[in-house]
Length: 175
Image 1: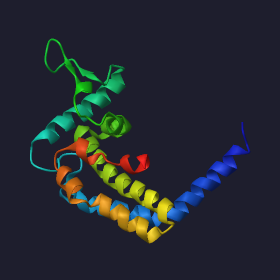
Image 2: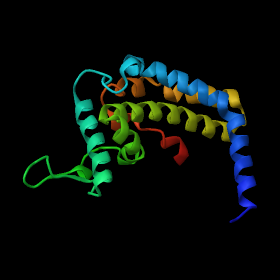
Image 3: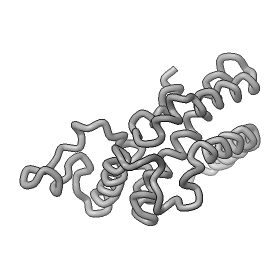
Image 4: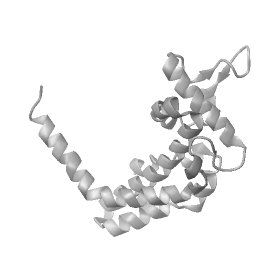
């Protein structure tokens, strides 16, 4: 349809991938280390001891089910019966849950929850890398900043049960 757009888009995607594949691989490795307790059983084990993470697993599954059935993702008619529960009044990271909903529908809510945590780590590091790369034009500075943000003790500690505090991937994009 628009032949001139395809080669340029493909070329820029290829350029981006060849420029950043090693950095992305490093962030994937360190994000995997950050959630290593669940790597062997990604779809049956939740990182951390049972607490708020159980609620987030449930809501991750609820969002995927609501999208699949055409219902509102912001309410849950099963909770707080008969009135339902307004999920929009909670601190749930809906954008992450909506993005993970195809995965959640295929592999279950525990797997979707773990995927959100994993991708939040990877993208937090990568977006911090891009921000510092743009400011300094130094890939090494960007890599150090990205790893520092990905492995910040605050983020790692909260990945064991507080999904809303781990979903920091969009903060570097703001700057």
